[in-house]
Image (cartoon, rainbow, N blue to C red; front, side, top):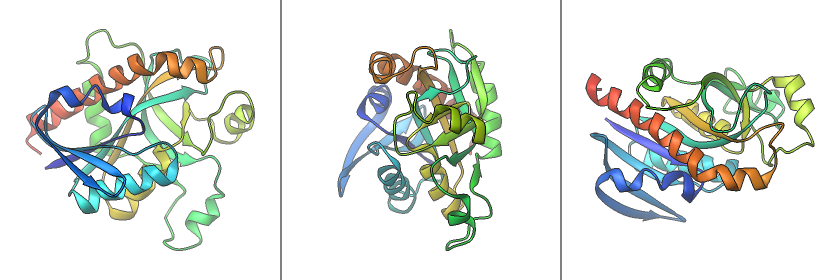
Length: 232
């Protein structure tokens, strides 16, 4: 078993690297892929870069280039619902593109069954147990994530909420999910909140990024431990 860890930026991957045993670094194109054991599980980890094209390319690299049997996206997100607070964690039950007409995905090649991509049921179940293992973790929510090509501050927030009702937004998850769906590979996204409707904006994102990334890493690590214990 090999699990791919995909993070959008260096700050999100940084908490994983000190714990990656026997770390190797392989350069493929613009990406450096870190290999080794994380919590006893074979791992290939990469910083994709922000936005959907980078995320999709890195997800495919993990799957077809490094044999990832599942991909876990660990990182940060902006809250869309008022009851989420900074450093709460959202785990994807499903994800979608908030800036793509669904018919583009369902009516044309490669004709996805749906424009909403469900997370893997087993990884979701493990994440519920994993969340109980993380000391001091704040609230954890499971639900819908929405992805688009721009940072959501004020403009567009209401329209996205009215149409899709996501817990949070980011710029990569749906692209990762779409690639995993295309290749029949399980995925899960673990994202900790950096900014909210009341504490919004890029300044809050940057200020809270390191701590939020560390929280997502801890939750993801607990999922890895459960995978190791299950032996598959």
